[in-house]
Length: 275
Length: 52
Image (cartoon, rainbow over all chains, first blue to last red):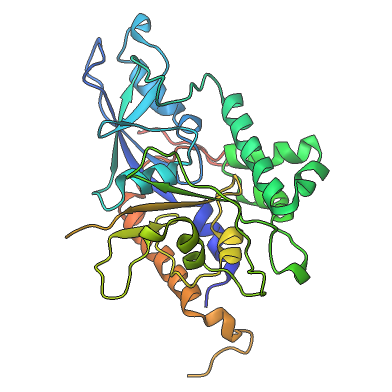
């Protein structure tokens, strides 16, 4: 039987095979071949695509190059969401490799945040960790850490160092045994059928009566349409890291094991394939 | 077939087993045919080989 710790490794080392193609709208001096890469599910697009940028810049004139951005089938990809969330939300159940279009002009300001440097990604990542810890421990764990500890979390993600990251992150996953879990579960529910960026509210891992809250309890409270009623055909898939956990899965366990490095449990609700 | 004593009933819960199984299927689906692809993040301990 596998150990729960193995889940942390599986989550960390998840990869999406991706084919990057330069947009037809871009002016090139010579033909730009597609570029194939394994993207870490838990990282951010703009953090792991230096090679893609370098590859396509070789085919372009400097004056035609503005900020790089990515699109999948007409949808600009929000770099500030983890790669795995973007894939699960927009491209689940499609043929691999994931086909992403690369742009260097006409940046869609109304859809995407600018990302001029990695320090912007770092600030976004650390602010998510702080927000998650505010929900879990009133911010006490992250505030007790030193600057170098924060750096260790970021460098662990940036350099794909599992042990370095988890040596620090485990502190963010602790809780008093008598409380049975975090104060609130940091989660975000994404949906393709709404313009809302995500659903995020306060939700505890244990009910006032002391019962363990499950993934099903969370969805029932936040997004009941995502659940299938008896005798009804399944309309939605509830996807976390490319898998569909059973609705009986305890929320606290999910938060500890299937959260992204930003310490949020990112849940995608997508239409079920009709076959 | 006897089970290891270290495995508590909770550890064999259906939801847990199902997560292990699905993660393993995910690896097969998303990674097994693509292991020849380049990694986005180079691990500094590896020396990159030239084509020749």
